[in-house]
Image 1 (spheres, one colour):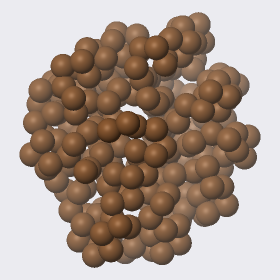
Image 2 (cartoon, one colour; image 1 turned 180 degrees about the horizontal axis):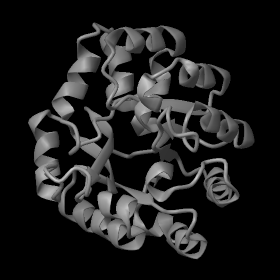
Image 3 (cartoon, helix red, strand yellow; image 1 turned 135 degrees about the horizontal axis):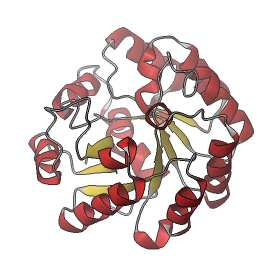
Image 4 (tube, helix red, strand yellow; image 1 turned 45 degrees about the vertical axis):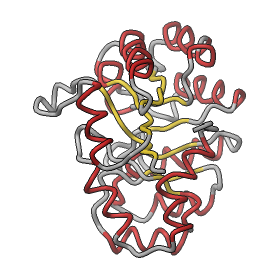
Length: 245
């Protein structure tokens, strides 16, 4: 089984050629024998969280491959908590945050309130990250991990592996996990596996912005033992999101 931990449906204005309709995204997953994708909405990330979240739920009802992630903007406090308070009964399995698109820092009071909520209720959080954005770079990830030691914090793109700092953060904080999409340097990936092991890493593709085939092969060509490869491709996501698949 393969679980893609970082998938979107919908259209990003900055990526006009990406094929983001649910059926197109599901076909991308099926082409690579990916069984499930943890899916958030481009619409929610771009401008309308409630509408985007509703789109993801509708797609999940239609396609078994789609496992829905809620997306909120902490700067819209009332809207964010209205969405969070109905999180479980609506069928979401985790939360997606995008500090860059929504223009806030993970260390801000607004984000901290959302992270408190998730820590208390054991909701895993996947956050966008990037070394060049101080709001979601390694320093911000370290601060969140220190403030919220009980939070499952999954670092989307692993800060793009532009530095080793994010790996050092994960070494220091066992509640930090690295999702590997859009990271192309094989030597850095191999070094990260040597330092963290495979139990802290999740396969993701960032589909439809990137083709899952490239990301799957990056894991498979390393030559890991099957049991260790399975942790990255499936079991870590299954465990952290408590998926009954």
